[in-house]
Amino acid sequence: MSLRRFIRPSLLISAVLSTVLIASCSTLGGKKAKRENAVRTTQAPNIGVNSFLWRASLETLEFMPLTSVDPFGGVILTDWYASPEAPDERFKANVYILDANLRADALKASIFKQVRSGQSWSDAAVDADTARQIENSILTRARQLYIAKVDNQ
Image 1: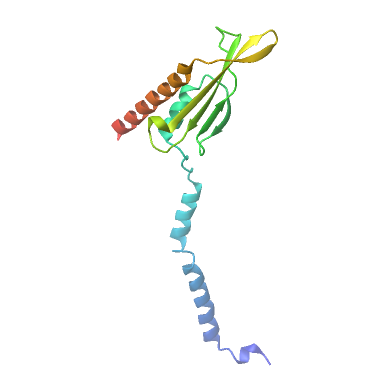
Image 2: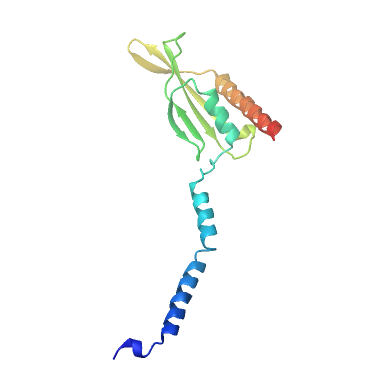
């Protein structure tokens, strides 16, 4: 026997239309929701730390070559840098942004120093104030960036 004998054409059409309507409703609002979801997924994600501290850190350390940068974890690692004025000593910096708030305790900088002895480099003591000066420079620049943004709003 044929299936057509038992199904009326009007029932078949209404069943197909209901399936299409139900499927289109299940897309969370149809075309508009799809468009909004597409926009949401193509936008750049926010970084995981305070953006003012992040940008200020990058600007403050821009003269040093970067080895690793993680905006979600808040880590900036530089490679060794030797200034032309003192080619026999080089510095390296690690900056950690620890919070999403613009606060002084949301920033930690570590500075390392090496001096050349012959053909090799050896670790040397860094003035304790050096890391604090870098942190203060970053914090000052972050405040400037924040003030500039607030003034423009």
